[in-house]
Length: 293
Ligand code: 13P
Ligand code: ZN
Image (cartoon, rainbow, N blue to C red; front, top):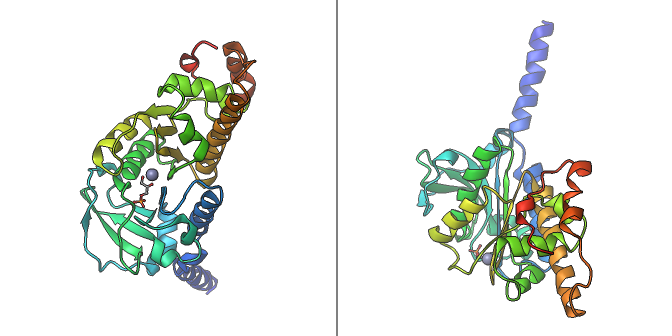
């Protein structure tokens, strides 16, 4: 009798759990908060930038009753077999970060990847039409790399157009070592927050497979890849770490812009200074990326 009662309560709890309104789900709220915050920081003008989050099994179990599987499969434009059957929350192509929080139904989507890793289907959102971000190939190829590399820990890929970082791509040599040294040498926290450095790729046409392949090659070794004259892609375990990385790199870039506007750096953190942060902060700083200071 007692066991039956426990099973009944547990069954009721489980039933309630999966009936969660998607608007109440933690990942959903965090995604929308982050897109709005990123817009508020001035990094997502108009439809600039895009974001994707790989749902955990728990996330999808909680909200699956909100999904509908009636829409057609569409081509991803890339092959990501390592993501077969996964669900992603993504921003829509041409949709504004400014509007995602107030109107998620029409500006974001949840998609499911098919079991070949070449197609996706919208299962929630984009109700008035549209498709996921044009950078979907880059998002998914980056997810595939990071999922494998981190044993599934990394779930967020985020692209924005941060002002100062873009400005620096017109002035600094478009080179991973040059950018990494300049940014590490602009604020003490930088080598601690991004000890692997900042990768840089020269200008390429956005939105296709070619830039996706190039970015996903670099995201293996760096959590942030700068797209010259365009913006940056970051990857992270969760929303906080992805946003925090963009925030720190952009702040460092702003300091570089300000210091250069005041005539340039007169003093520097030396390579030894930078490397001396590794032990006390328990981070593996890639010293090979420090150019002569
Ligand atoms: P989407 O509107 O297709 O996401 O494109 C915005 C963007 O920033 C392209 O790089
Ligand atoms: Zn962009």
